[in-house]
View 1 (cartoon, rainbow, N blue to C red):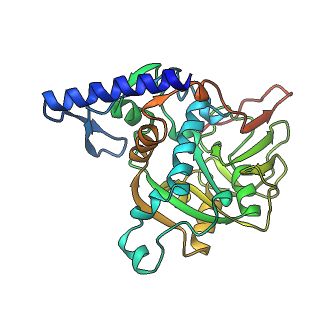
View 2: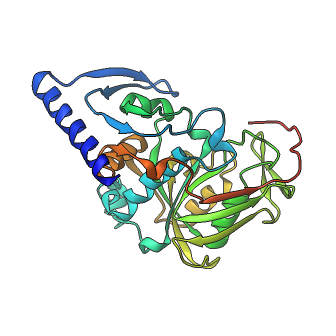
View 3: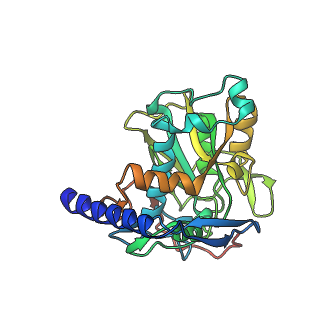
Length: 294
């Protein structure tokens, strides 16, 4: 399979090289969900041997292969050190130039509501990534205690809502959700969400293969909207405000995902992403009740 992937990657690379030699760089226009007009580099191409699932609320209620790919890209960006070049000028002046924990304490979380389309099997490019994420999200680093991380996962919303935008896709940790247990709602937070009175539904099994420590400090790689407390992300916001090393970088998330596909996967999303990789287990034996959906 590795030989097959390398062959596909070589063919794509040669095709791209010939295309660039024969023509000038091609760009199409894309207007994101915030009304920003962007130019997409149409010469960039990759290949997926599988459908990567993002539509029909799939990533809002369970782990998906696209969620695995997306969070893998973010964690790779931090662990590889590539993120170091993207801290903004103020952070660099303050000495904030790298992720301040070891790799085994780096995780990535991405809310399912920010995965909006499938990527079909076959060739794809920057236009397909823009359809998946039609927002100008930037990569952010948030330092959290293990206890805060656990509450951030707990607080995704009403367990009976089948389209919860704040359900977290993950890399670098495995966790389980007992969806039969009612969410212990506390203070209202926004239109649809409530702070957690207690953690009763979510259990973190391990972090990067090691025992979860509620007292340890973990670096969560996510995006600027979570950093600022969107949807049910009140714990992200509180943790970011409490630790001055937490930061929003200059790196555009779509660019980082493309970087990962290109540099780490050789432009081929292969069988490793054929199915969800078992990072999230959702147990639900009771029939879900209808509830308001965000």
